[in-house]
Image (tube, rainbow, N blue to C red):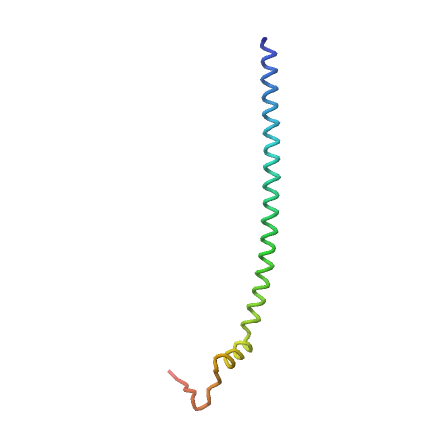
Length: 89
């Protein structure tokens, strides 16, 4: 084989390897983009759930509800005026 044919074959192999590298990197890029989109959807769903949980927590922690639960379940009541002791410094 003469030198120009050898160089031509070597260049063809290098072009083929380069093409395979481009194909691989494009495939990897698409897979990573798909994974990123899945993670973004998951994040958005978790943010929506977090917002709903914050609203629920706010509803459960209202003063009126806490007082009602204290009266009904714990049999608590407001102390009589004679039972209240005020301490001063």
